Image (cartoon, rainbow, N blue to C red):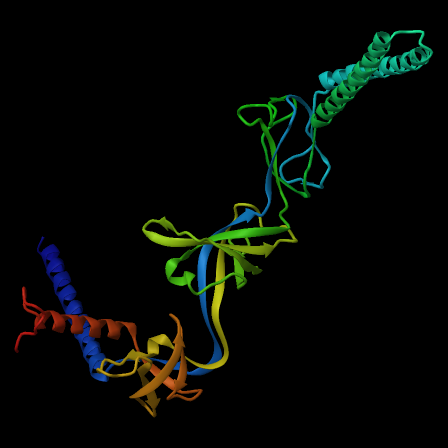
Amino acid sequence: MHFSKFRIILGLVLIVSVTAIVLFFVNGKADNLERAGPRYKEVTVEWGTFEIAVSASGVVKPIDRVEIKSKASGQIEELPVEVGDFVRKGELIARLDQKDEKTAVEQAQADMDIAKAELNQAQLTFERRDKLFQENLISEEERDQLVLNLAVAKGKLIQATSTLDRARERLSESIVRAPIDGIILQKYVEEGQIIASGVSNVSGGTPIVDIADMRSVYIEAGIDEIDIGKISIGQSATVVAEAYPRLNFQGKIVRIAPEAVVEQNVTLFDVVVEVQNTEGKLKSGMNTTIEITIVKKEDVLLAPVMALQMEREEGTPANERTVLLKKGDDYVPHKVTIGLSNFKEAEILSGLEPGSVLGVLMTSRLKQENEQMEDRIRSSRSFGTTGRQRSR
């Protein structure tokens, strides 16, 4: 029992001792780091290419998507296409049951043959009787009746011809062919299904397939109103599909919407980019990212934006910045003039040379300084005042 108590006490003593040693070394190391001063990350000023680009998410859309319907109603007897098939203009898409249409054509053909025979008979009768009229062997009334019979026969032939043409047209309408070269994007029916006419039905008829020429496609993307003024029709754009992250498709802007669309309190303008898709890699509905280069300058002197500090003195030019230029083992404040900049790099117009080394305070140190500055600002303000600082 006494031995167990001794072991417990000894363990507690060891824990306290180890903790004290660790705290001593940690505090000592922290003090050394603090005395060593701020830590810097070094960056080099170099020649390079400066770009400003606008990017947005987009979706692949077919340029000419055609929904195909049949002008005739009936049961589908043949449907030789599937989704993804490439069809050429004039190829068979669907064939409907043609029994009624063929019967109608045959009946119309027979009626026209009869009309032709009747017209021929009326013509011969008129010619024979007209000679008798010239010889005053028949009356004028009889001759007028012959003229009427001839006109009626001609009218019956015209009517029969029209009926035959319409019957043949209905027969041809029961065969649906591709109106363009393209790919079958959607298939709505199957063989054996009865469909409604697309022209005589109140509902607009039954769609059979959707077809589109995908050799060129549109990319529709929403551009923020902040950036829309920087782009114009005809500008080049690079498109990257999520399905092919290592491939760049080149396109150009062909349309900019005149009216904005608000999505989640963000004002966007739809922009359409046309892209050649000769290999057929881009599919309808694919998600993409488009990037439109606004500015591109070759061989300019560039420095990272994180190395540039804003000048806070009143009257300082807007394009003047301060950097920490490395001289020997020290980092000396140095003024430079910048040109264009983006979120990553800035164009150096004067004040630095290629190969200049700049110092950037490490993130932890910057965070500490920002927190200290915020504390000083808070301590310098009095609650409820009009913005004057309290005297200290």
